[in-house]
Image 1: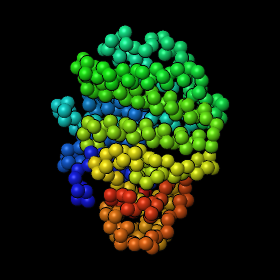
Image 2: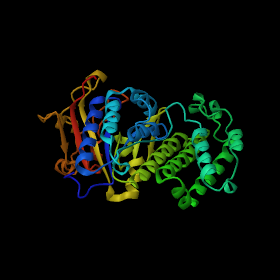
Image 3: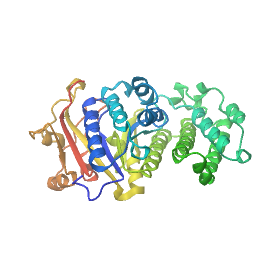
Image 4: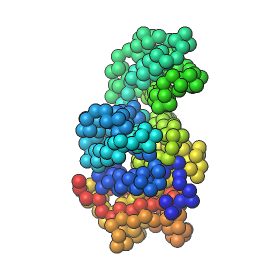
Length: 383
């Protein structure tokens, strides 16, 4: 925190690869210190925002069994991580006996998306409609639950894996999907228009959850729309929609209080993100860039770089890279003032490190000054 002029509303900790408990243990340690010393009460991770509600219910009220909650509530296959399980266990233990206003909160901030498919909007659209029907004025609803069910059809129409590579297999530009986008927009608008009554009739948390349903429904329908696109911009639009969904979720969480957010560096950096997908180079503004544009100095980003992940073929970094310079230090891990390091290196920036493995993205030396800090982890052992 000494690197930052004030406590940020959103403190983002990135990682250069996924699935390594050593990096997640570091995240857990940082979150515990932020909770105990800086008053942070929310952690958001790169996981399905709707599934994450199961975890939030568990840590706040004890609902469900720990192992099942972690398995079902943390997406992308990361529910089996020992570090993720320990995070949820510690949060639940911390909350025991505390008043609701002082409890820790858990959130996923990714959409209900995987590499091969996107979820059906059924769950979130139905939940939003149910909330408005139960607590608002039914006469103002733009449609019935039966109309939604008819337009949605079967869920396998939406989750067809072949649609990721073949736009013609996507339902996203069907007449039904177009009508659902209009209805989702009307439902979300009605939720906001009726907010004074709804917050009083239920609770702020219930209304916030309904807003999450609305954001997610609209995001999913946009995502499916672009899955059906046949233009060269298709993949760029898909990663852009995902970034927007992430950013909207983070801004909603930040409105509640200070948040530690943890995700891949590419989702949190302020500079444009790049990757190759389907052999094509993609560029898009990530969630971090979008949130930073909205929050300004209340958003701070700390990247993580590493030396070795030998079990993934990432060996000792060459000495002419940033990772190589840091690897020569005696510490197993350290925190670096990234902007001072960039200034010290001057115009002769080190060479970028070459990744031997698709799942690892080395630090881009040109982005050093984009970070408010840099965590370096010397060796990541197999866990």
